[in-house]
Amino acid sequence: MKPLRDIHKRAAASPARIVLSEGHDPRVVAGAVQAVKAGFASVVLVGPHDIVARQLSDADGDGLSGITIEDPATSAHGADLANLYFELRKHKGVSEDVAREQARDPLIFAALMVRVGLADGTIGGAVCTTSDTVRAAITMIGKTPDAALVSSFFLMVLPDNHFSGIDALVFSDCGLVIDPSASELASIAVAAAKSYTAMMAQPARVAMLSFSTKGSAHHAHVDKVAKATELAREQAPNLLIDGEMQFDAAFVPSVAATKAPDSAIAGNANVMIFPDLDAGNIGYKIAQRIGGATAIGPILQGLTKPANDLSRGCSAQDVFNMIAVTVVQAQSAKADRKEP
Image 1 (cartoon, rainbow, N blue to C red):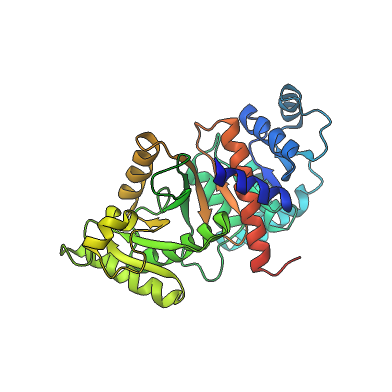
Image 2: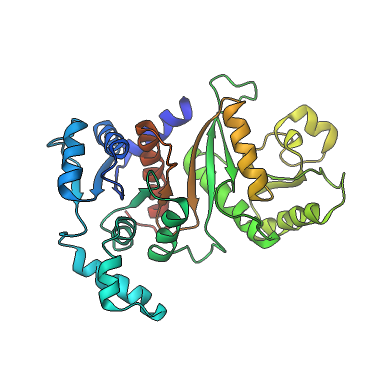
């Protein structure tokens, strides 16, 4: 698929160091080996050294340059990361003893490595729950100052030669924020537009989705989406965004010509913002299971440095692709911070 090939190529052009918090899982290790061999990342596998080393051997990764193992129980970074954890959480009543214990948790250990610059991004969730993975990312890495909240998106890669002529879409938020307010929905839209540009290296065209198009229905749920559209325009005046609108008016130019003839996106949206998690989760799964789209995510947005969540049903190929996505996010984050 061209979008994935392009992401892999961009990742390889400026590789990053990615820490994987579940180095004991064979899918994670296999995906890591594949990514290192592809040349777009160096990888840190976190977990008990003997177990990770055995998985690495089984994946034909023995002696592979670009892969290291960090065992939180014996790591040379352990004391410094435990001290940092204490400083970050002592206002919550965390003691130094508890900090040392918690810093050995692989999710927290990996996120702390990213915070201090020992890695450029982290990935978890093949074994751990989304809530645990996201909590570690938010508390240890933190959100960007301009983000109202941390949210997520799916990169929906459409089948080759799709009738729309579009290669990929961003769907947001389909995995994290259950019932966003109008202001939160606006923040999600602005973040998702930025995510699309980072992933696809193309301008975003954002549709704020609803069961109404331009006042065709009247309800508080419609009002929320319309208000969110106004707020997003205020936050990002140069962003091409329209709403509220139904999916067909956002995606099909001929339908847009009838339902929203004055629309700025004219049925050519490439970023779809769902009004709540019910709609988003259902929508991405329909696109995946009936429409044949490849769903990559949930990918987190709004953090100072990348941290992403895998599905517990993921494959090694999913891990491989998520590493590439995380590398591209790290490139974008460095550019935002004006780092070389």
